[in-house]
Image (spheres, rainbow, N blue to C red):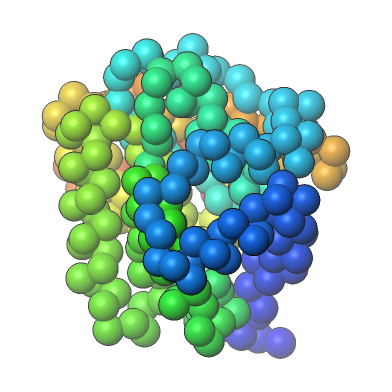
Length: 266
């Protein structure tokens, strides 16, 4: 199969993630909430239930929490390994951010389940946009939806709305999570530089202009036995171009990863 039509790696992890939702007793609650169009569900509370199913701190080890200042907002940027690594890592990190700094963090999340993917060439599973939108609507206080597939008519307008929503959260002192890659890595190694999203660079530039810190986070798995999350020291972006800024973001993230996962920054 040509790389342009390669199956998205997320497809292989959906069953395992769904199993964790089921064992945490969340499936029935979420389906009911989605059917009723409920909103404002507490993501932190549900994350605690899911993290317990993954094994808690025994499975996800987080270092560098001292870099998250209590009462201070920030833009948390992280690499994007496959979902079976990323999902429990981000859930655990969100809980720690809330417990340490008192923030209910917000993260930017794609609106589609990719069916095929080659970096930014993403084609969604039919019907997945409507499903994901209902899921995101449940957690309206914590999730900012982002169109991912460039074939969508609302691709540019939707991403502009997501950008504005994220900046509004940052300016009000919140913490926002975003991946500058915006797609799953191949082999859980940082992607080629030309595939990074300059919009994240522009967001970091604007946040830095307001004195809002950027925190680089490296996420990786250790042979399926454990997941590591390393939070780096906060910094402000000095670049004025989004392309250059996002390159700096990923270079900082790479510095928090073991050498074998740094890709172009090895």
